[in-house]
Length: 492
Ligand SMILES: C[S@@+](CC[C@H](N)C(=O)[O-])C[C@H]1O[C@@H](n2cnc3c(N)ncnc32)[C@H](O)[C@@H]1O
View 1 (cartoon, rainbow, N blue to C red):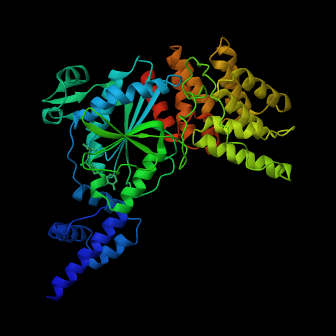
View 2: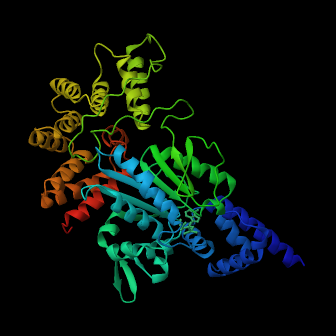
């Protein structure tokens, strides 16, 4: 009797730990299975149940959480699962995102709870088929708490059963029969990366605002506690670009008016569109035009300038202290830039310009001017900055961004090189040089520059990612860099 009671309370504590550390909620009917898992895991760790639970509660026991994730999660998945959602992706979502990303030619997507990779690879296949040209970069990141399923995802070999819903034409184009299985084509594999991540944990970089075009999070929310469901949906919403899309599983509903998301219906399925990058306000403008400072050089389109928002004048008329004024304008504009509210950031800066702006203000002004398509003015601002300090690596970089799309590509390359030379820790000019070389078919140069960029991106300064990342965060840029490095075919 006492032993039974102890075990029941142990299982209750186990459920609390699973909720806190993996965000999982279980039904009472799962209690016998949980009791069995608790007994086996405690035995495997050579601990009594009570000691095992205390150790689990103390945290920082990563291997055990991984083992529990492997033991208890349901990993059912297959290619083109809920095919109607992939039809909506191909026919509604991607055409829109491709229009919005025309200047960058990059699509960044996320599969949360990707299991053995079928969902993430399906997203990449559908994107590859929808893209207007092979020079676009598709970057899909798959996340899962279980290391075992991610190992299978990395192998990219699947049974015929996994392909049971895959259209024949897709199977023939992107899968190669190998020893009774199907191996995914290398071009799709290069577009997709995987990472172990427990959604109950934080990761600021992963959830950086405005970085993904599309997020799939299907058949995961239903296993999570209401608090974690809410926090995950909030993080996913924030990290979508304005106009980006979220697909959930059939049983996951966010109600009729989820914050920041507009429900959409087509192809007999529901999904959500990020209504605006501006939080909690309406009406919400679409984000500004694609940024020429995006990490893909391509031909910078001179986007139409959006009219500034009328109600976005700085909050104060005449701050007393010029230093304090500069800091507050800069902070405000950087915050807006981080949220991809480019036009508002520019309005905020231009509404409160000092006669003698600090270098950081001039640089940000140049970045925002370039993003608004006012490349000539942006170039002038960079040159003014360089007149005052010819060794300013950021200014050389931004000047190169302004010049890269015009006839002066070689001059731009010179300024990127100078920026990289002046600050050997600066990843962004290396990335730009690598991408430019790729576009010019100079794969050897591309390999060298992208390899350096990859190493430096890990510790690139946050403010530089915000200023020069074109709305892409560290992870998206790293994925882009990796994908281009692989595509350059240079062995490292
Ligand atoms: C049923 S599968 C869904 C696979 C795919 N999204 C689909 O719909 O076909 C759920 C996945 O979520 C993963 N998962 C469960 N809890 C998680 C957590 N806390 N963090 C990250 N992934 C988790 C599981 O390991 C499992 O692979």
